[in-house]
Length: 130
Image 1 (cartoon, rainbow, N blue to C red):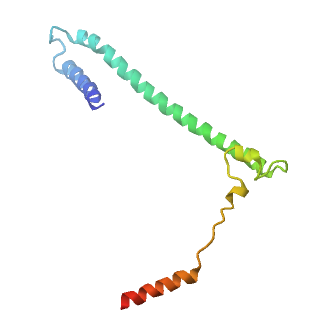
Image 2 (image 1 turned 90 degrees about the vertical axis):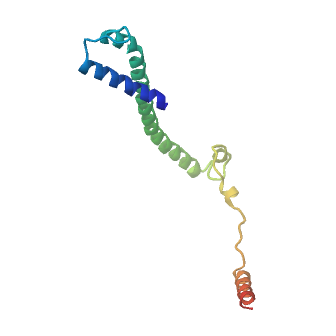
Image 3 (image 1 turned 180 degrees about the vertical axis):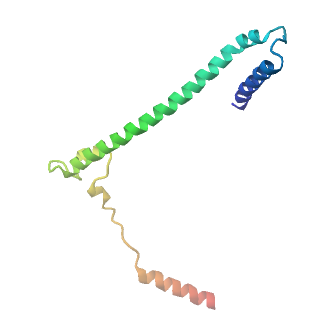
């Protein structure tokens, strides 16, 4: 990648310098016009690659805008499924859409007994003091 960028910069610098300092001179058996004609495919492909990068960026921006609208519609549909009496938040449809049902969310999480952890901390303090 770096070599490609350097080649493009050097080509531009070489042509500009040749045009400004010695436009009537021939080098390497070529006039300036012949050199430009010989290097034109490289310049054209560079422009084509640059255009492709810009087109890709534009396509990504358009996709992101479309995705925002899509996410809003998806949210609306999912909310409708949750609020629908025939389906709801524990339905097979809601689960099939990739969401966790309310029944699945009941994790059975219990909190540790706070007194046990306090006793452990007090014991640790006593051991360290001794």
